Length: 265
Image 1 (cartoon, rainbow, N blue to C red):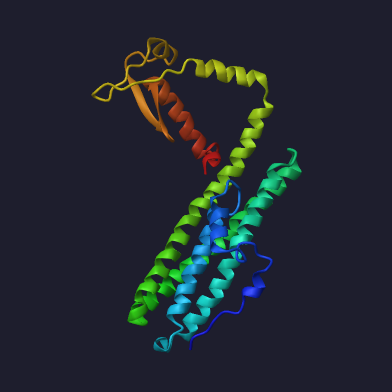
Image 2 (image 1 turned 180 degrees about the horizontal axis):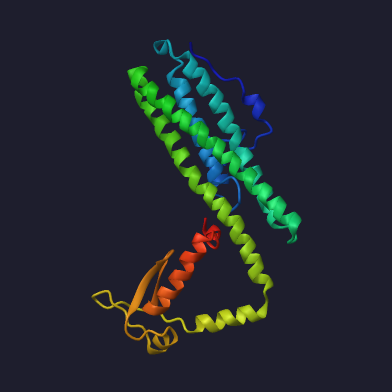
């Protein structure tokens, strides 16, 4: 019932699969755009499928031939997606280098969609491998239960890493556009930024965790009596309570009208 894959000759055009393990790890650790998290997730999924394939290739796994064959197919698919992920990400980078305009926007949208499609396919395959591995661990050879469980955990790790990456790639493309816009706005905006950050003050909390807001900042923000401390992403903002209520009402109205919130999704 055992078998050995003879597909190594098919990977000559795939630099990830034709590389040694040591070389691939060096490439992952290098300061280059690819291979990165997407390729690592795809290869992790492929390794998980390989463990399932191995655990169902012994004579004791009689009746699990369909699982073995499906794991083999997934291994081949997922391993090829590692290089595909790097190529798709390269297309995104090329689109970001284009001159601003409608053509660039269209190319960037298409590139990001393509870059997201690859990890989403890996997610689908990894989810299937995790289920197959868990079933094999329960019904297969007890001597190979540890290998099947390892496959299940690897597949879960690959699957869990991918939704966050999809959001990251969308955000990265959006942020790159905004950065380009900021650079084009010129010296007036840079001077405004200098003036804004010139008033920044480093705080040192006392033993009770309290900080004292300097008088010039209290005057600037109109902090007199009642204040509101509001969370905003990774920092806190201190507002005059009345001004905050007015801005909060405006924000809620914008959300209800479908404006503003899309920039943060």
